[in-house]
Amino acid sequence: MTAAARNWKAMLAGGQARLETAGIDEAANKLRWVAAHLLGCGLLDVLRHLDGIPPPGLAARFEDAVARLETDEPVQYVIGETDFMGLRIRCDSRALIPRPETEVLAGWAEEFLRGKAAPAAVDVCTGTGCIACALAKHVPGARILATDISPDALDLARANARALGADVAFLQADLLAGVADASMDLVVSNPPYVSTAECHRLDRTVRAFEPRLALDGGEDGLRVISRLVSEAARVLTSGGRLMMEIGDDQAGAVTEILCKTNLLKFLGLKSDCAGRARVALAARIPACR
Image (cartoon, rainbow, N blue to C red; front, side, top):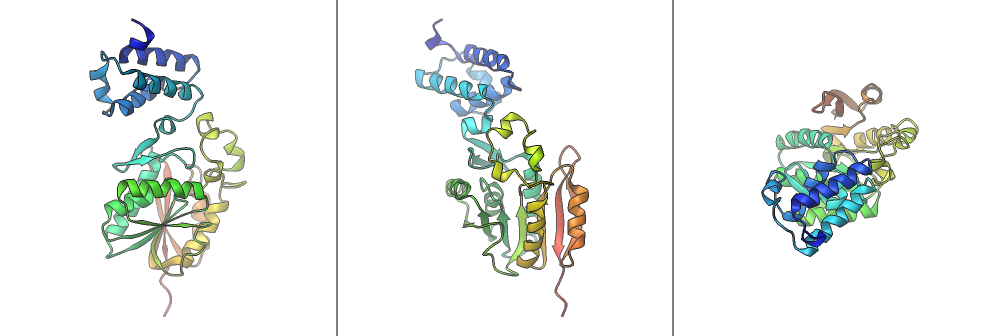
């Protein structure tokens, strides 16, 4: 069997050997994900194609993907997309890859908005736009704004909104700059929360490929969170909610930040599937009359 005529089984085996030699984790899973993307099928359905011989163009794209994976580039960037809240989200190095813990955040945000008539929400540090798009698609009638300081990330988020038919408005801004006072029922955010020192210790697949701007939360990881808490209190309506993703070691520090403000009431923490507190919730204290 010539190299050009290899079937999917041989290509996957060869790719796995290359990746394992390069020390890449979860090589088989990543390659199956690539194959499923190229074949336009589900992960389990790849098994039905193992004896098939891909056309030369498809085989070349697979080899290209293997070469990129050998450098530890995230598989989501290699195939250019990932799943989030049932939506296909385009992703590349302009923004962080949407992760399961962010789905926990988006799920709580969706639940809160569903209980209101024509609610307004702003997704701060939107990145790929995954949260904003999910809320726009899952909560009919909601008015969704997404902000990011990075024009490149906003371009990607806009592309996702167009592809998904999600009605989202976009604003290039540092956090909530330019958002009117008392105009939002919900502020939701996955802000940068990794300490500067920890950024240097992240896995290479994150450190070398995902944008530092979206990761680095300053010396203690709380620089952006502290600012966001203050700005959220300004833009939230009376009784409105702030929901933030936080680091798995930040629950105590973030709780303290929220409890120190006299404009927000700390409501609690929500855990991810591993039982780690990853979402902080607070409410805008109703104005005194």
